[in-house]
Image (cartoon, rainbow, N blue to C red; front, side):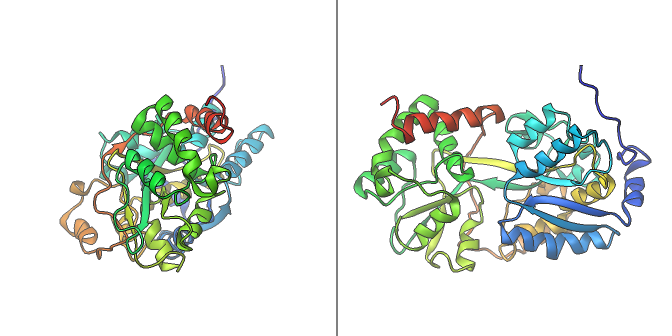
Length: 373
């Protein structure tokens, strides 16, 4: 039986959260997170870091191209016997890496539900209890919501497709004007998973095979990333874009990548939705500081700043009726934006974490290579 690592002295139970805050003063929290989102980078630097400094904690971003890089660092330290003093204090984690790390016993336990601001979360929300259907068990804390959103240019495509069947019909009528990134790219994988969630796995593969020859370049090649797809959309080479970031249209318009006439939309079949979490490695050198930062990420003021279209425009994870009137007003004061959706549609559940890679492999066999047709 695998032995659990010794509980660090910075656990929230040791003297309550006030003791955690006391231990955190003077610590520098190295937050390993995806570095390719400039909006998130600004939010961390301009909103989170100053709030943490007021509590005596320094936040230092450690940008990574892939979350797996941060997890691999923790794994390498574990193999080297480094049970304390680890180089990773906090990770913006995704479901697959959380699941693999949980199986390996990499994460600090029993801390997330003890954060003072955790009381502002809906305890009955399944998206907060599970991450890609893996029970969270107090080993990670939420900080933002994500939804799979499409984009069209209303000047060029005033009536975009509103279902997967309409998308197929649109592609038939407009060959070469639709595409999606090739899995295992995160966005391309999410597109495939949303088709699966809407239609079932076998029907989804049939659908994607039927769609393939109608795609950009006849489906012979796919964009390598969301950024490449967004560029194709912005250049007018394809008519639709997509992202697992509900605010991606606002961000792309702001950066001048897509025209101001671009608008987000969702499909009536349902919208793939999930929650972004942060996790703390069990061997983190600054676990107390990491808990302070995680608690700040749930602060209503910081959540409202992130939900504001002038900031990131990401949906909050807080249950608004748990906030007092002054806290709720910070959300209602946020300006409306044509680049953000008020209604994200019916939420579709994510696959289990261990089903994602096999699905991507099946897509490669049956759609990319045309096997099984």
